[in-house]
Image 1: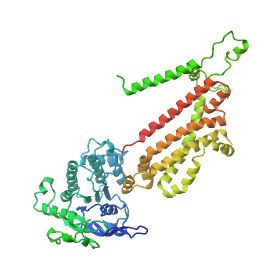
Image 2 (image 1 turned 90 degrees about the vertical axis):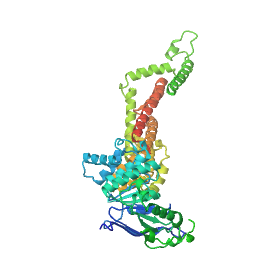
Image 3 (image 1 turned 120 degrees about the horizontal axis):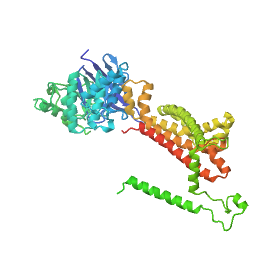
Image 4 (image 1 turned 120 degrees about the vertical axis):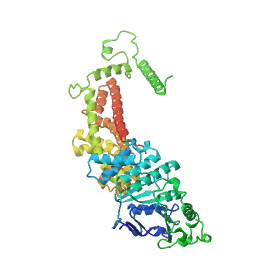
Length: 290
Length: 275
């Protein structure tokens, strides 16, 4: 059960246009996520990361393949899968508190008003927004809005939390602060998380495992890299870990040199995973320009 | 120094004084050269030419009318308050009836591209028809002038509300719909808790346009159907050759129209949100 909490099997997405060969965004995408695991996915724009995430959430339907969570096939959106969107997706006519309350009320319609309020306030406090409950999203900074969005997702206590580049639009300082909060909340709640990111350091800080996607079209999951730096991690400490730079260089090298390599195309399953040392020598000569 | 607002008030009052001053000065009857004959006295002075009454006469008239706005001395002599009340009640009944239909139908058109395509040709065809063109047909079918006037208000105020509702609903951001979907909201709850508040500013804009049009149309409609109402009052005073009352009622029409718009504006501000 715990080994295969989420199973993604042979996912692919194709767009068929008249008079044109079908465009395959990604194909043969298969991976598992264990309960309590934090998995990040990294890849260049256009490789279909967001589509994969939308498929996991049930908002999008794959051309082929299935997603099974907790033994049940994902067929549509569900409160079991909470999402934090890149653009926050708060309802602008509701206050911060009401946005969280919106989620809580949807999750537990039978709860009393008082209980809903208490629960919502608790989660707003968890993300450090005490005192800003009654402000509308337009009166909050980008970082605070993303906190509300995270509070809304966590407050519904989903089995799987999906984060779509949640910190992409934030400045580096704010990003750091909210990342630290996310580390804290996740370790406290043992939340299972699937997250899209562009930021290698963010992935190393947060993830148990990092999936690397090759470039689209015909993108595949090229590698799965286990981050074996012990948790809980501190931003300042992880860079001192002996494996940190090797890991980081490996990821950056993938994004810069290997992600566009032809030999991933049509590959079934994941080519390689940890230990890092076992990854085949990257054949730089074969790299084709992106 | 005066701030912008105070300056605007000063300039505004200056214009008013200028316009009223000229109006007052040029609408005085010429002085009679000799004593008026009995006939001339009976005809209201020596002037052979009818003149627009001066503002001072209108102020006197306004004071007179507004000090007792609800008197009722038979079908041909009712206070301005009663006439306005008739008109407002007709406008509001036609208007709310239109809202009752336009907003749900607009919702359906906005949500369903199929319904939009199916109904759009009819909307485009019916919308440009002058509401008064419906009047004969309405009188024939409904056989009641009062209800026909309400129907004319209904038909003229339905289009802006319908089109704006459809437009607002269709334009609700995909992200917000996705929020509703990921929270497993039923279609009905999605409509009420996400789409309605999201589209509310656009819907209110349509409602504001509609109330303006309805108020424009009621005057003309009441001139046609007669009996009661501010439109009838204007026409009746014209038939009585009482231009002072005509001008006074024109001003009252403007005033009430402005108040209706202010109310809708306040309502619009309540549902406004900032992205």
